[in-house]
Length: 46
Image (tube, rainbow, N blue to C red):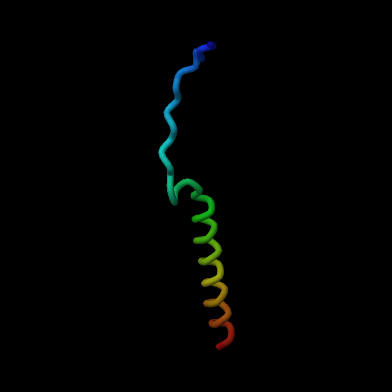
């Protein structure tokens, strides 16, 4: 029987929604750009 000399590592806790902040930030940016485009389009159509 062989024994491992490696230390047992602690697993990171699940980050939940903050595990992939790039996805959340991308959605916010896309939504902001879309809203700004609608606002500009509405302003130019007057």
